Each structure stands twice: as structure tokens, then as C-alpha cells.
Image 1 (cartoon, rainbow, N blue to C red):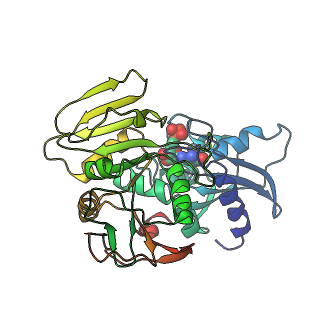
Image 2 (spheres, rainbow, N blue to C red):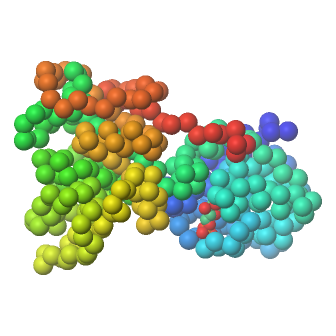
Image 3 (cartoon, rainbow, N blue to C red):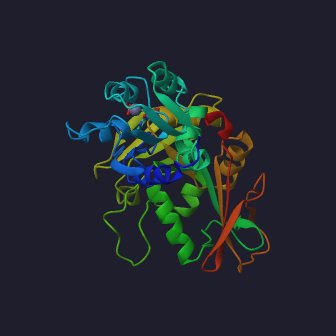
Length: 363
Ligand code: AOF
Ligand code: ZN
């Protein structure tokens, strides 16, 4: 019976969220122990390399606690492999927990169903699929990475009311209002990397940081993602003081050279050579191998157009100004499948489409 456990699973989801910003490439996982319909202990995965949620919970239990008839509830299938930590299935078996309730299966090919099989083979009753959709949505980035073995990819652009993302001049056109910009900076603080094409880099001179625009004072707490410029022919200028004002590495992906350049001012610019005929799938797979959990692609039109055509976008975001019309210029991309949600941010409309995950495979 999957019903009756929702209250406990909801608590797992809340606990799981505490790991946000800290788990890196790992999933967000929370766990509770239930006895006679009440939660008697809780745990969660607090950070990359740290104990998994189940182990966090079970290791903290007092020695003399009677857990004979308890049920362990967790939003992700307990693992059965040695990663940076030993298998959760082992400690569940060792503690003789008779029943385990799971939200969704682990898409990690090393686990994927085997954690549950192992528990069952030791006589533990396992029920799966409790609030499965919520559990998968909470970890949609993790699921996407595991399924495609590449970084989670967000395509974002700003558009005028008549559908342009830039005018035809050499200069930057400011499209979004303050609320939309603030929203963007929060988003930037949540991704591992921000990527732009060389044309945008040269024209807009973007800082690609996550300063919060509430005031002119920069928040020292804001975290800056790695900055990436896609510049196959090395047309951009990477020797400016402005680059060093943001404390995060700058990677220049190109087809010519491979070297680290440390400027006198101390910031790192890393030139990384791409294979001759690179494709987006491979680039995102390579970023994944560099521990880039998520990448926000911010333009320009060519970069976004090619990325969207590759089918590698997991989330589309458009900040659309509802007032400004420029009558011509560089057209903003289209949503290939429309958008699912929209909300006003001041005068701008934020529209979002998230590519669905084949959730039925993980219930
Ligand atoms: C669980 N509970 O809380 C988490 C799980 O390198 P490790 O040892 O941290 O293992 C990472 C993998 O373990 C990750 O890819 C995912 O499959 C699983 N994460 N599993 O049972 C947890 N965080
Ligand atoms: Zn585990």
C-alpha cells in the first residue's frame, strides 16, 4: 500500500532540501524513521561526500532505541554501491529495519533497482512509488544528469515585446527590468557554470556573475559560477581587468589552443581546446566530467540556436519585456514546445518550459 505514507515522504522532501547548494552532483535526499504512525528520527544528505540520508539517520540513533517495528522512509532508493560512502542498503540490513518506503528509484546506473533488490533479498519489505512525481521533480537535475550522463542545461534569453533579443548595433540593449534581473542573478547563483558565445562576450562585456542587484552594494555572499565563453576561433579579448573583478575562473572553449593563463592580477583564464567537429552532447558530457552539475547558457542567438537544435536543453527560460518594441534586430529563439508556466516579474514576463522526465521508469 502506497497510501498512508505521504506525510512521512513530505517530511523527507523537506529535509532533503536542506542539502541544496551543498550536495553538488549528488541528489537531495531526506529520510525519516516512523514508529506507530509517528516520526521518531530524521536524517538528510548534507553535502557532497558526506553521509547519505539513511546513514545519517541510522548512525545517530541511540544504541538502546527499540527500532524493531520501525519503518524507514526515504525519497530516493537506498544505494547498494560503494561510492564516497558505503552502501545504505548494508546499514539498513544491519540495523534490521523490517520495512522501507521509497519515493522513486535511483537513476544512477550503479544503483537503479539493485538497492531495492538487495533489501528484499534480506527479507525487508519495500514499497516504492510514494509521491514519486514530487520526488523526481525535486531531483530533476540529478535525474537528467544520470539519464543523459551530461550536465543539466538551461537555455535563457531576454526578449523584447516584438520578439528580439538584440538590436543590430554594436552595443548592448538592456531589455529586462530590475525584478527580472534580480531573478536572473538568483538563478546564476544556483548553477555551476554560465556559458555565452564570443559575440555576446565581446558586445555585452558581461560579468557573468551573480551579484544581487538589490542595491549597488555587491553581496560578498553571492556565489559565482564558473564563466565559460564559446569562442572557436579565439576572436575574444581575455586580457582585461574586468575579468579579474569577478572571483571565478574563466574557461575559453576554442579550437586553437590549450593552456592556462594566469594574469599578473591573479585571475585564471583557462583556454581549453575543443575537438575539431564538436557537438553539444559531447561538450555537456565533458562539462559533467569536470563536475559541472548545471550550466546556464545565456546567448547569443547563434549559440542558443545551435544548442536548442541539438536537443540538449533541459529547461527553457525567457524573460519577455511586455512594453519595449524595437521593430527589428536579432530574433529571440522560439520555445520548440511552447511554455508550461508564466509569471510576471515587474513589467517582464518569465516563461518556462521544463523537459519532462520519463518518471514511469523510476516508480
Ligand atoms: C542514497 N541516499 O542520501 C544519497 C544517495 O559518492 P557517494 O557515496 O556519495 O554516492 C553518490 C551516489 O549515491 C549518487 O549518485 C546516488 O546514486 C546515490 N545517492 N543515495 O541512498 C542518499 N545521496
Ligand atoms: Zn546511499
